[in-house]
Image (cartoon, rainbow over all chains, first blue to last red; front, top):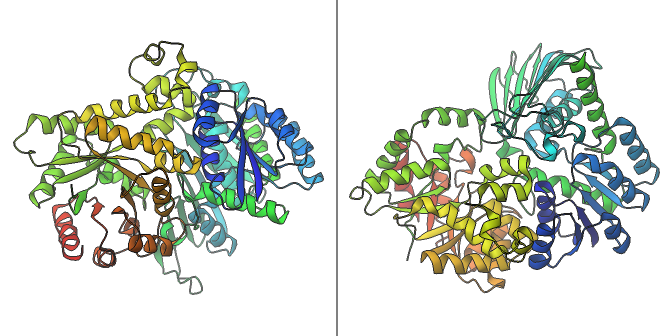
Length: 337
Length: 286
């Protein structure tokens, strides 16, 4: 059995705790947070050991891996501390506040041969995987354009006050929502190398952006549009989608379905001419425990498996997450021009 | 009390569609006005449906107002609330954090509710906090029959994952005592939940979980679900029986017929013909 610890008991941290704890290969031995409310609650109801200092937790417990789910500005010191102690690390997204810190963590993890993963969970949603597979076999021919979108109702009226409203702490829509979409574009279609016409728009927040719009150009020269808004209450919850247009057709993909349009049939994929719908029911990744979506359990399953095998993961490693941080930096720089 | 075989759900009213975001949007447009929801509910009643199982979405409060204003019409009608409407809180937690969300949603000032020293005191009395949340969510149903009160799967499965099983026992006791109702549990992890509930002395619980022929959202696999449905003592409510639309109603409901313990089926539909068809299938096979 692997021994695990969790740092940060916000929405993601609690959710990770609830997924790690019942995992058949893992013992959740300790959690760490600064909120006495959360610590008292967990101590009382779950019997897990609680700490209010992550160094103390890491030093006192013999941990195989930790999950870091704190506000972004704390990722660097916490992940670094764990990696220096030889502990495999799963870190929530976005990865780091600065490229320099991110680079340091990537090389530290790779040098120490430690499994490292970041919580870009969309890669564990079957429909996005299927989109990646279809693009890889060239189903759409030469690509012409893409659109990456995410909308949801996080900030729908004016108010301020949490770490999410501090631009210096990575609290806006770019880091929180758009990072997911950028990461999907980067891993499914290709790495963006430049951003043009970027706009970070404040809608209700005073200090941070509530929407992100930009043209992105990939290594291949292909360009497309990023359109993200977390102040859109026409959505019940975060809804992420990727549309890709090629010379042979078009695919619209979200977490629930793939809509494929082909100009000519594709026999090897058994796809007819015109529209074909594919649903998540055919692609959902089976999990032993479900909380809020298969993807949250599936990403932990992937991480745990790689820790057991002591092999680096090819999905969502630190290096890929750092790439996403770089793109966000491009967007910020462009928006200030 | 035995539950009705047919429990009419509310997903279609609140743009919940597990298969298509586009369909969700169409539903949001169609059910923009409460009157559109009431019309479909009345159609369901005309086909003989008597139980509405719904979340504690803000708009349900309006439906409840309508029911209270027309007591004769809804005399035999029951609501099984499922609390909380999770997205309300999930979106708030993203922005405000957990403590911030508690402050926003607990009625009155949480710190005056717990006058003896705010959060520090609160932390020693989680169960009291849970009771305050339950009472806040239940307020909209005042005067309406709610013989079964469910907790939604996000909360159930969170408690289950954290192994905080005593919270189930406390919920169970409070719902029986305060609301004179049967507690119910919605989950995506039915076998694990039943074991957990049994371990804290909760016997023969009402558990609502996905049950469908293709194993969709049946965590741990279809086989263990089927084993529990055959061998264990509990009162299963089947949901997601159409596997988000991947199955046709006839084959979906026929499958449920293999498990005589299933007491009720939860389903939602927007047209009278569809409601009637599904209801007849359920009555035929269950």
